[in-house]
Length: 331
Ligand code: NAI
Image 1 (tube, rainbow, N blue to C red):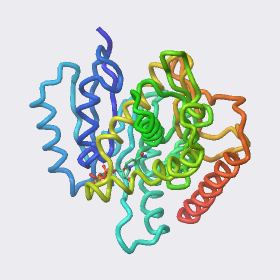
Image 2 (image 1 turned 30 degrees about the vertical axis):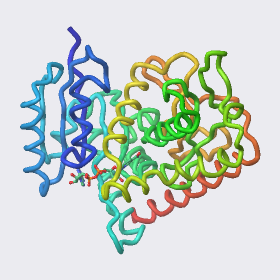
Image 3 (image 1 turned 90 degrees about the vertical axis):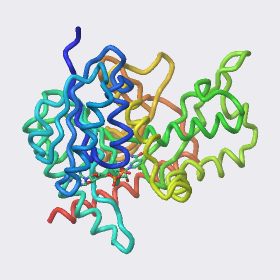
C-alpha cells in the first residue's frame, strides 16, 4: 500500500474548507488509491468549529483517511506536509480599504511562508486559494526562499472551469467535451478568459470553439464578462461566496499537477512568470500549463492577437500594482 500523503488545508473551518476536506478524504484530489492525512489549520476564534469538522471527518469513516491534525498552531499544522492548500485569509469587509486588507494578508502569508519553509516536507506543493490569491502566493514565495518558486501556485482553475461551463451551456454539449480555454492573469475581474485556442469534441472530430460559436460579439463580450463576474453572481444568489466549485477546482488543480494533464489538454494555473508571452517576470500570473511527473510547464508558442494582448497586459498591470501595494504593506 502507498504511504499516506499529508495535505494541509488552512482556513479549514471556513466555507471552502468544509467542502474541500471531504473531497480530499474521498480521494478526489490525489486519487482513489492514495491514503491521506489531513492537517487542518484555523485561528483561535474558529478552534471549536474546527474541532467540529474533525468530529465529522471521524464520523464519515473515510477509508482513505489515515489521520487528522486539527490545530491553531501554524508550525504543528505545517509539519511534514507534502501538499499545502492555503484557503485561510482575511476577507475584505464592508468599508475596508484595499490597503488594509492587503496589510492583513501580507502579514498572514509572510508568517505562514516561514512556517512552511521550516516545517513542510521537502518539495511540498503549495496552492494559494485565499484572495488576493496571486499576490498572497507571491508573498509566500518571497518569504519562503528555500521552497522552489515552481512549487508555489495560485488557483485560477475555478475561472478555467467556469469558462468551460459557459461554452458547454452555450452549445448545449457536455462540459467534458470542451477543452483548452485559458485564463490569463489575475484571479480578479481583470482576468482574461480566452477561447481562441479552445476546442470541442464532436462526432465529426475536434472543432475550434470559434467555429462552433459563430457569435463573435458573445465570445468577445458577454462570455468574458460572465466568467469575470461569476464570483459576484454567486455571492448575489447565495449570499455566500462560491465554495463547492472552489473546493472542486482546488482538487482539480492539485490532481492535474501531481498526476498529470491528459495528452493534448492544458489547464490554467497561477504560476511564477518566467516572462513567457511577454508577461513581466516575477509576478504570479495565470498561464496555460501542461503537467507531467509532478511539474507544470507553460504551453509555449500560442499566437496572440491584438485583442488578447491588450487584455493580457491589463491584468498584468493590475498584478504589478498589487505587488507594489503588497510591498508597501511590508514596511
Ligand atoms: P471563510 O471566511 O468561510 O473561511 C476562511 C477561514 O479562514 C475562516 O475559518 C477563518 O477563520 C480562517 N482564517 C483566517 N485567518 C487565518 C489564518 N491566519 N490562518 C488560518 N486560517 C485563517 O471564507 P471562504 O469562503 O472559505 O473563502 C476563503 C478564501 O478563498 C477567501 O479569501 C476567498 O476570497 C477565497 N476564494 C478564492 C477563490 C479562487 O478561485 N481563488 C474562489 C473562492 C474564494
